[in-house]
Length: 214
Image: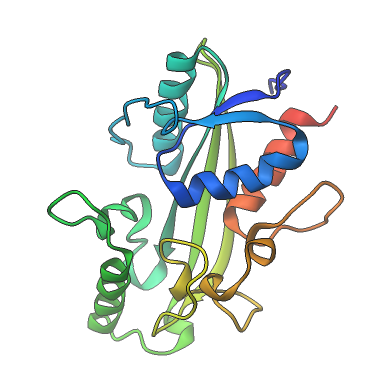
């Protein structure tokens, strides 16, 4: 495992919601970070078939363009009744013909697919959010950190916080969806905390324990 010996990195993302969550997580560690969007880096084609492959594509592209370490996230919603879909294609399910993304439409698409499978009860609507963080260096070295959170797919959507599919994901052990939680409730985590809730916070906890702590 390679330790990160700098607090200057690039957040390899063009997704505003994802950038905000990563900024919340890395802030307490004194990072100086700019996103790939701010730096106007070209968004690479995510041609991988796993979260790890797509995370590496993004992180390596930014690390090489910036000449410094880059941290990326590839994440998605994996639904058991849909054979793991939308999975790595989670963002694609929200794409419109004009290239924009409409997650209200994507959530409706998920609900329609579940209805077609007859998945009505909570036990039939299980799934998980998965996040894979990739830390890449300009020389091509990569480290991966995977976080998952189990839950059920709620309907109708509840809450306007978060982003993406958050309003339909109810994490295990909670009565609220990610869309009804504050940022602190969803992904707040700091060293010393035993647990992290969100998939991204769980992956980040591994990143800290592996690459930052002595």
